[in-house]
Amino acid sequence: MAVKEMYAIASQWNMPVPDAELAPIEIEFRDVGKAFPTKGQADAPFAIRHVNFQIRRGEVVSIIGPSGCGKSTILNMGSGLYRPTEGQVSVGGEAVTGPVPKVAFMLQKDLLMPWRSIRRNVELGLEIQGMPASQRKGIAENLLARCHLQGFADHYPFQLSGGMRQRAALARTLAIDPQVLFLDEPFSALDAQTKMILQQDLARMLYEEKKTALFITHDLVEAIALSDRLLVMSARPGTIIEEIVIDLPHRDNPLERRKLPEIGPLAGRLMDLLHVGADHELH
Image (cartoon, rainbow, N blue to C red; front, top):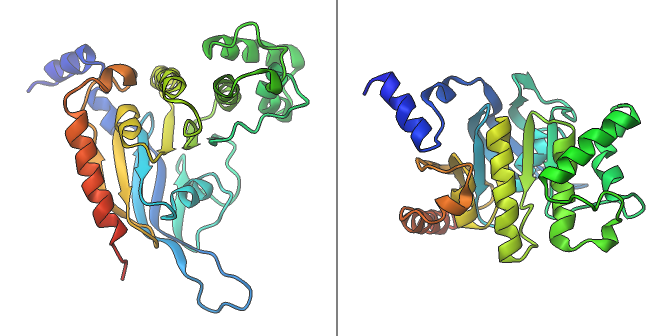
């Protein structure tokens, strides 16, 4: 197939064009292991070991695996909160040796500061960076509008529903214009309807702004609906046992992607892999 035809098909189906494969590597884990020693313990067990993967700029990749397999440990090392026991973690082509300014983290809890208004919560990262108040306000109000929170800038967290609070947390995450987003089950505490609406908002923003994201979820359909690729982990000590390319349209529109007939078989394959991963032992 000619390159011109590939571009045309990619454009028609709202899929990444072939040049995306040539994008620079944004996140890399090279033979990474992490152990958590305790006092008086000579040989600490590893939470993860021999973890290898790359994520290119603009990709959204989800990690799935059994509970306790080290998924959150991977995000913590990518953001510089943990140092690897072995191997190397890189973001933006630079080895991670401490907190990474170009990375933003979003958790399942919104962690909004109750004494600050919603707008001032969104402004927090910009305030830490030293941005002038007038400029912070404009950015915050634009993001609140994009996250469907118009008219709530001067409200406080206790006045908002759980879904609205998580929208505010998403706006705060995006306010610093991060190069990389780490998302640790950000929608797991929400009802199904609110979850799908927020997935739609996040997917569209990531696609339009060509952000790189590493996403953790236990929801298999959510992982398929939002991602370009999936990384499947084994039980502890966690390692990558399978990589699956999600060669489906509508990465920017998970509601449409969920309707595709391929979703069911993909979810079934993931269930089989998770069953294998739960029995996996790394030697």
